[in-house]
Structures are given as C-alpha cells and as structure tokens.
Image (tube, rainbow, N blue to C red; front, top):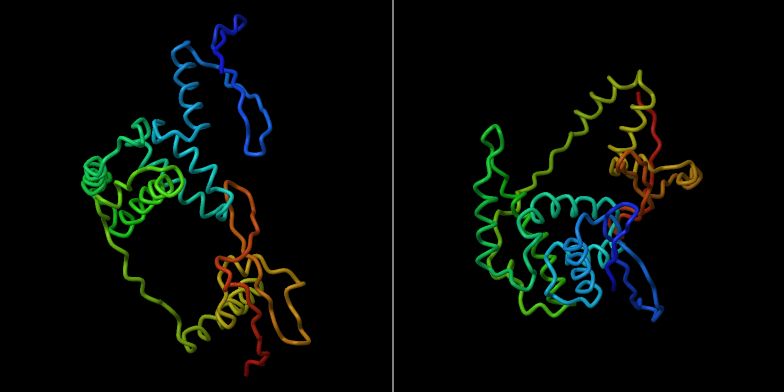
Length: 256
C-alpha cells in the first residue's frame, strides 16, 4: 500500500494492491482523505480486513461480515439485519477492536438498550430487544467460526428480551363471507381477497402471481415467487422458505 497527496485537490489517497481469492493480483484506491493521518488509518484497517486480522475494528469486521453473508440471504432479509446493525449496534461498537470486546462491554450495551425510552416514554419491546441481541450474536459467531475469535462475548453475556407469543388472528368463514359481499363491487380487491382467503397464500405471493401460474384445466395455482418493495424498487424473489414453493388446488364454486 501507499499514501499519496493529490496536489490538484489537496486531499490524500491510498493505493493498494492485493491478491484476490482466485490468486489474481488487483489494485484499487480510496480518495478524498482530508489529512495524511486519516489516509493512513484507513490504510491500516484495509490491510487488517484483507488479511482477516481481528485487530481490526468492529465496524471493519462488519464490512467483512457483510461481504460474506449478504449474497447468501434474500435482499429483504439483509435489509432488515443491516438496519438493526447500523442503528442499534454500530453506534456503540463501531470503533472498538473486535478482539477486545468483552462480555462486560456487551452487558453495558444491553443495559443502555433496556433503559431506552422514546419521546413518548415507551421502551423497546422484549421481542425487539431479543432481535437486536441476536444480530450482535450472529456477527460474533461468524468471527468465532471463520476468523478465529476465541469466544463470543454476546453469548457469554446472555441474551436480553424474549420472543413474543404470536397469536393467530383469523376470520371465520361466516365473517369472511360477510366481508366479501361488501367487496363485490370492487372486482380487483374482491378477487385478491378471494385468493388470499381460500388459497391461504401470503400477500407477497399474491402480488407475484402471473397468468402462467394458473392451470385452469387442473384447477391449480403454483406458488414459486414472492413480491416486495425495497427503496422504491419492485423486487420478485423466491418464496420465504423452500416449503413455500407449492401447488394449490383451487375449487370452483358459485355463490347462491
């Protein structure tokens, strides 16, 4: 690696060469550092990440974790994970060296989360606290399993929060038929709810359906994808789980 000053802009840049996983020699650079010290600090972190050395900061290791994991999960799943990490974990641990974070540090972070109150005096729910802690645990597990971190301080500290008891809320047949009668003057909404109720599909699965998914001779509909919106983009992906890929038998009937 090398640090240079750009005389045209007065800023500093880092140029470094590395060997990728294919054994190919590569070169890249980072521009726009206000001082030489900032450029050298970035250079040091880049070298640690390239060598997967746990002397790096937690923030740098998160970038390693992101590179390792992002392509292995659905985009929507990564967005949820990333949001929790960036808003609830990085502000506290970002500049700490990951190898120096101990269970007592995690406990202090947990206490701050549990003491938090929003502008209305409302704390984080027990279920949300559990979700936040699970993301920190996952990052440390990755460091233990693949980068030789001696132990997981988040696991040693113990979890916080608890899983919410999820209750199934549903319409009875009589309730749905009453609702559907009121929807009949809105054909698009009516047929959407008919599919949702009688076929038991998720809303994202419904929105991803195309004419090719229907077999009217066999009276079936095939569920093989789901829809969601991300940052203003419409995205079609595979369903939530492998078991979500299914063919549903549709029964045709006439209402009296």
